[in-house]
Length: 130
Image (cartoon, rainbow, N blue to C red):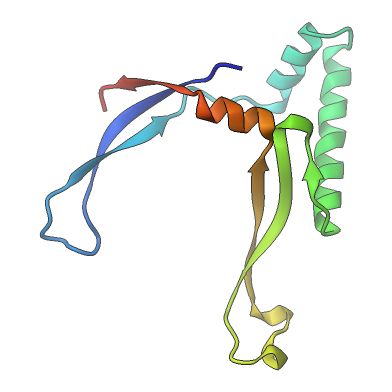
C-alpha cells in the first residue's frame, strides 16, 4: 500500500513567546471526503456483493462497533488497527476521592495495525503552495 499525502506550509506563532518570529510548519491537505455510500460502491466493484448489501454490512459494522466500544471492549478492524474508548479526568488528591464524576470527557484511542504502520513509514509527500 503506497500512500501519497499532499502537504502545505503554514506559519505559526510561538504561543509562549509572542515576540518570536513565526516559524513555518507542514500541514496535511485533505484530498476529499469518502462516505459509507462511496465505500459500499467501491467494495461492490471489487467483490460479488451488491452495493446495497455492502452498505448494509458497513452499517451493521458501525452499529456493532459502537455497541462493543460502549461495553468497554477493544475493537480490532483487521490490519487497519484497534479502537478503544479512553477518558480524560480531573485529578484527585487521594484514591478515595476518585469516582465517575471526575471524568471530563470520553474519546476514541486508535492504534494503527501493522499494515497501516508500515504504510505510514513509507509515505510519500507532495508539497503544494499554501
